[in-house]
Image (cartoon, rainbow, N blue to C red; front, side, top):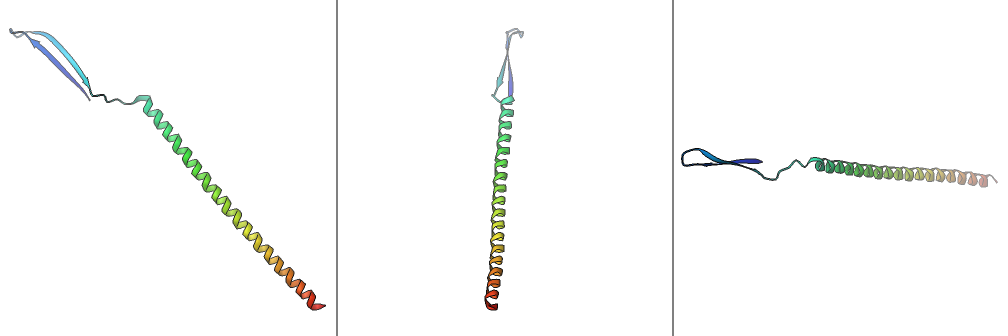
Amino acid sequence: MTEERIIRTENPDGTTSTTHTTVINDGERDGGAGKWFLLLILTIAIAVVIYFISMGSNAEIAKDTAITDAANQVGEAAGQVDEAAQDAAGALDNN
């Protein structure tokens, strides 16, 4: 906030001999370009954090998918081993 004080010196006959104006500024400022620069840096930092969080989530999803696929392949292999064992047992019974 800016305050303006006007000081007038009057002579005994009622005339004004000196007028002095003082402007008092309490130091508030807009911040100018510095404020916008900091806001830009903050926005970029937030975007980078969101990017890395989303990349971490994608990595977790890929890992879970790979584990699921591997488990399915093990299950299929176990089924094939079971069929082969039954075929071998059947062949032994026929001999």
